[in-house]
Image (cartoon, rainbow, N blue to C red; front, side):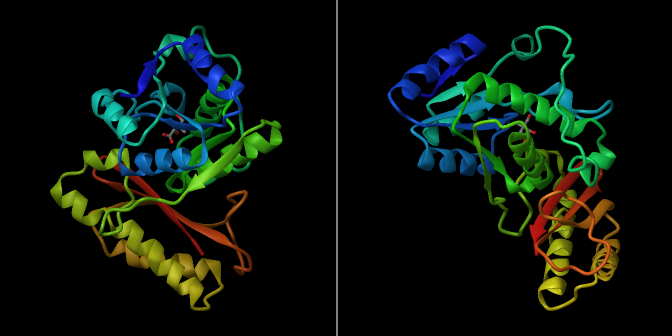
Length: 281
Ligand code: PAF
């Protein structure tokens, strides 16, 4: 059974020994509700680090007013099973007062990268993510930290934060884990009822369609986007929040010709559930 600690001092204490004996520390930051995507992150950390820490903390700072902070799934018992099965050495599960003992007056803002895609529809979200990830990196001082490519904009923002702030940690991106029908695995998929689950794959199919257009020679970004949007509009059970083609580093929309690696990214609503996904091209 993986050891669980709740305070910052206990967490710091636990990483002293492995570090002193020359071991590397791998951190997998999560908000719990662990699924196969998280299991893959822990597996990657396990393969590349001597001591693996999983943090579990539903971070209020990255949820906007009216978002699903209070109904976000909290499943500690099964989360611990996943951590144990994947061979994590330590779970750091701080209560709110441990990470936010007083009003937070200091924030990390990764400008530009946070502006588009999800940032446009979730103001303050990436500021909340970057701030809590900075805290976790400061508490545990891992050599490597693992993030899923499903949240590609988050991965890009954290990579830039670490580089801009000279943080001594390597940020590892891990490919998205998908259901057999292509739906990206997400903690929020559990909100979907059966009929919503059927239409939820539309986003992935739209992304594949756009990826195929680009790979077979269509280089006009606006055209690719328009054709993918036409495809998505055929499904009345979803509402598209955004669908864009952006550069892979700074997440800025490509307005003209696609001439370097891009990320195609989208967000849709299926009922009250917001789903995001992306693919490279
Ligand atoms: O991807 C997530 O689960 C969260 O955004 C993270 C990185 C754990 C920060 O709260």
